[in-house]
Length: 308
Image (cartoon, rainbow, N blue to C red):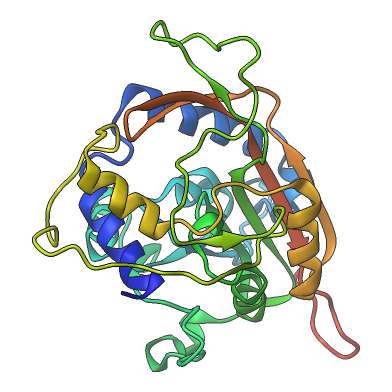
């Protein structure tokens, strides 16, 4: 089974419970606050505040690509500052949830639209369904907590860079290597338990956090297709699906800088969130350190720059 298929199976299985837990709502709140409080760092064009209100001029068009969008966290974070959002996810169930939330919020397809797709299949690097102008020239590409599911992170970053207009930015969130702390039954951090406590991957070989992974072995477990799981459950079936979908469960700061640079980004910066976030996955309770990274597509001579 391919990594893409493993990702589809896992996220289809958890789409119903993926972010409806109280602790997940708190994580989303933390991430939203951290990114919105420092939009200058991200280089996001603030269309909602940059337009002079004393004129009748329409707001500048600013377009967001939310890749591996899930239910749309990054779209919700940056939505107030862009004029339109397009999302791609490999999981049909996640895309259904993404679009349902947008429609429930009164946002039509011209403003927010998600579709099923994969830009990282090296055998099909330019899918025909994403060749129209609608899927190119974005000001911002955002990926929330998904790079640890990608087989070749430098290639993935490069594919997203190609979708940006010159001067556009890629912003990601993920997890810091060595940044986990176990939580006790009371949910409080266990002193002295700092380290890596995310699910251990079987059948994956990876390096010291640069994000390049090799030798992925995925096994088909008959009878599990279509089964719905809760993200907190600790059943063997859930753990198998989760493990099969993850390549590297965390990154070093330097590793992220490395694959951004390898993909051709400039003005790269990586930082960690000020406070750890409490999470529960596969029966394990822990506090994790979230990292954020951003990089800009360079402007070549003669190219029109995205005014960020």
